[in-house]
Length: 248
Image (tube, one colour):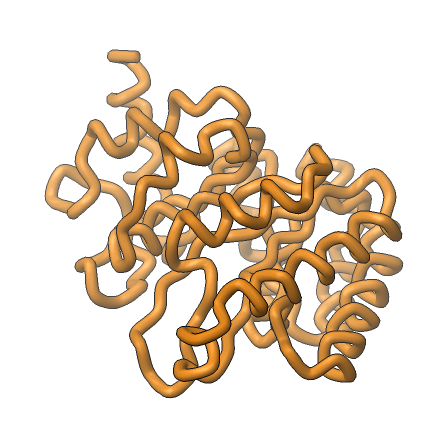
């Protein structure tokens, strides 16, 4: 999150990492980045932005969708000062009974949303991320690979890419790696228990196997690998990955 940015820059310095994905929930969160702006250039650290979970690209209420577009543009204007490389989005959510009856209509709302974004921004990519849904009264879209296949068929710009969250896939599994391999440009790494998104580190004792990690590391089009986990796990996770890389 933005308020943790000083700590994360120091971690990058220590571990020789060169990219940070920052969670921005409110426009005021950019103030934390302004306080450390020179440190990004000084340490050759690039920035990606994770937009808030509340942002709903598939919102059926037109006025609400217009609000989210305006909110995105406001962030994008500020982000140009930081040379933001990408903005990462979840697809959004809807009432369970309505989504189950009209899923394609919700996805078409996302097609329209993304098309408008990509026609009005420059030099920045948009990534859409797989998530999971617990099937409550509100459910998430983007918890199955077919959602993304539909979106990439209908929004064909290269600046639209896929963020593969390997931890989310442990909760709602689908065949993202083989069916979206050409679209994957960003990977979120973390482990969990298969039920909750715990953001655990990578280890011999986790649900993620060495083969799972090896398959992710071999994706050709991926540009960014983000350790989306508690800070205390990152050092050991890097060592775990390095042992796997030796055998690739």
